[in-house]
Amino acid sequence: MGRFDGKVAVVTGAAQGIGAATARRLASEGATVAVVDLKEPQEGRAYACDVSDHAAVREVFDRIAADLGGLHILVNNAGITRDNLLYKMPKADWDSVLEVNLTSVFNCVQAAQRHMVAQRHGKIVSLSSRSALGNRGQANYAAAKAGIQALTSTLAIELGPYGINVNAVAPGYIATAMTAATAERVGASPAEHQAMAAERTPLGRVGSPEEVASVIAFLASEDASYVSGQTLYINGGAR
Ligand SMILES: NC(=O)c1ccc[n+]([C@@H]2O[C@H](COP(=O)([O-])OP(=O)(O)OC[C@H]3O[C@@H](n4cnc5c(N)ncnc54)[C@H](O)[C@@H]3O)[C@@H](O)[C@H]2O)c1
Figure 1 (spheres, rainbow, N blue to C red):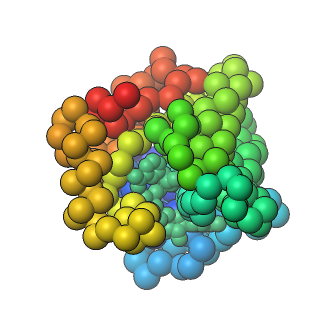
Figure 2: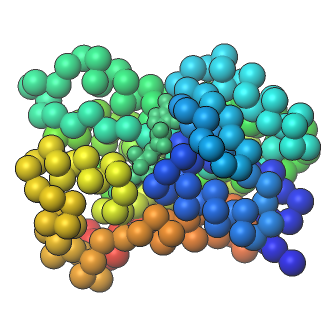
């Protein structure tokens, strides 16, 4: 018997990286998983949607609930970076990072809670980041990821009375396409960039998407039934 038997999960940004690992993990424990991403992935139950589009999210989430028989778990994972020092950051890059990383969480939770409140049950886990504590060149991303933590604690208060747990995870350096793109931007290979991050990390290595997925699965499960409003850092002990 799996922890998610009979449950329908939506994972946004699940075409690759942490989202794909999370979709695989939830499915391996019995969930029916809807993969939401910009482009329709080839495998699984895939739904094409830009999560920063409020109306599109509402339409897709209603379609998922009708197709798959409910909506019990939401993982807000879709995200982008547009790094730059503040003085040369284009306003468009501030806006797009806030829209895709933070406003999307508002859009998805608002669409999902209609189904969760009606069934008096739901689990919501959002991807914050260690960058929420401050990171040079990431004013937009850090603000969005800190916003997710505040949104998480507030939504836990508003949705708790309906049996809905709302939590966030804040990963440190995880080896994905996102961090490979960061490496390229600073003129390093992914391996060199990971080695530098590993040196700053007490566990002496960077993390894998699967090591984030397992924590998200914990927070989405009844094993964390009395945990709500929390942000759990997954960063190998780095401060
Ligand atoms: N990799 C890390 O080190 C790290 C650390 C902390 C937090 N995070 C967060 O974890 C999440 C996943 O990161 P990742 O490293 O797997 O990234 P990734 O770039 O590998 O994957 C992100 C996915 O989101 C999708 N996406 C982007 N914009 C979208 C939109 N508007 N609508 C729908 N889908 C969209 C992309 O198509 C892609 O499939 C992000 O929120 C990221 O900010 C990552």
